[in-house]
Structure formats: C-alpha cells, structure tokens
Length: 291
Ligand SMILES: O=P(O)(O)O[C@@H]1C[C@H](O)[C@@H](CO)O1
Image: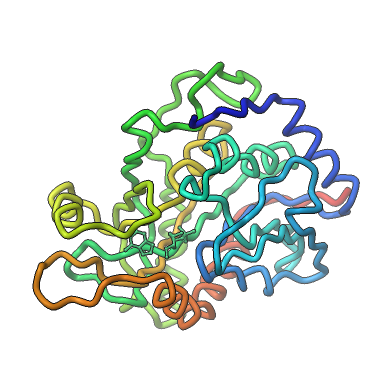
C-alpha cells in the first residue's frame, strides 16, 4: 500500500521533461511549504507557476492551506522551485506519490531541498510561534514499514540501503542560526527532533506522553518521507518546523488541537519564515544555470 502504484524512472522523467519544456528556469534549490506556509513562494521573482492538476503525473493536494501549485522563480538571482502544498500519507496518497515531486526535482537538477512544516510542540520549553531547526527525525511510519523506498531499488537514484544519520546539513543549520541572530529573532528559534506520525488525527494524551519519553521535540504528519527520498538521491537537506500548537500532554483542562489554529499561527509567522528562508538561499553556495 505504501507504494501500490510503483512509479518507473520514465514516469519521473516524463514529468521533469514536461516542466523543462514549460519554463526557462533551472532550479538548484527546491522548497516544500508546510501547512499555511505557501506564501514563501510569493518572494520569488520572474515566476512561472503551474497548477498541480496541469502537470502530467503530479498528485493533487486536498488539504486546506495547501494551494496546489508549483512555482519556479528567482531569489536574488538564485533559481528556486517552490511547492505551494505538499502531499500527505493521510490524504490516501501512497508514499511514492507523496515523494514523487522530490525525484522530479532531482531530474530537474535540484541539489538542495528545504522542507518546512507545521508541527505541535512536545518539548516543554517550546512555545507557539517558535521555529525549530530540524536536527534529526523519527520516522514512525518508516519504522513500521511504511517507507517510500520499499520495492525494487532504482539504482539511478541511490543505493539500496541509504544511511539516515547526518541527513540534515550541519552547515545550513549553522547558517540558519546566524541569520536568525542577525534578524534579531533568536529568542523564537529552537533546534530539535521532529517526529512524523501518520495522522490525520492529532495525538491522544498517552501518545503525546510516549513521544515526550522518546525524546521528540515536535510532532507532525509529513516531511520524513520527502527527506528520506531526497537524501537517498544525494540532495542536501535542510528542514524547519513552525510550532503551531502545544500538544496536549495532560488530562486536565487543555484545549484540543485543531487545524484552524495551526493555520492561524502559520500566518502569524509567515513573514519571519519567508525572510529566514530567503536569507538562507541568498547566502547559500549554489551555482545557477539558465536553460
Ligand atoms: O504539511 P504539514 O506537515 O505542515 O501539515 C501539518 C500536519 C497536518 O497536515 C496539518 C495539521 O494541522 O498540519
């Protein structure tokens, strides 16, 4: 079920070739926008934008706060492609579909993947509106055998047994910290472990307590499969979680989490995230090519 629709190299190539025929942009950086964070794409200049429904082979977004558009453009001369809306396992997509765009990006020539997500705080010291630089992840569905790399390995993308230690690029983490310092927002910045759960329900109190004991700092319903597939095919990866809610860890008197609050907090911090990600891309070491 994780990869019920086995996708062949030709399928990824067909989508990549179509995109290359529709835009002059040749991105080196791809950004996947989390819930309510799609406005990051608005910072791109000279945009070419494609609805997912118009892109051959692309899955469709079904979640509120995920616009369903692929936007190509420039940031101070650096060429980027931005997913305004990602695909989640809980929408019913197989993990091959969830991660389909990442392999298409690889074939477009992308070398660095930036992932963002909305996540709930498990760590006691985190507050709503904090930004967590992802140091590592726990891929719960992956540990249980729901993994996009299950099935015949495509050696053209990467090895059968890819390592997952050190996947989140340390230099980019340091750069992000430095930029936060220069923006004067260090007080909102955390560094920690993201845990992917399957969703779509938010956690029970007992599950939240379990995640706390496991050393999870923030929990969400995405990101790990995309990071896995990007790392498998040799991309550099950087990830940010926007803390949109405190996960309920007590049976006494806490408000339950809801998606509307998640979107409201994303909106509140969108400008800061836009500036941070633009700053990273502008100062990152990348080469650009035009078609
Ligand atoms: O796409 P992300 O991981 O940002 O979305 C999170 C997880 C759920 O899709 C949704 C819950 O509000 O936000």
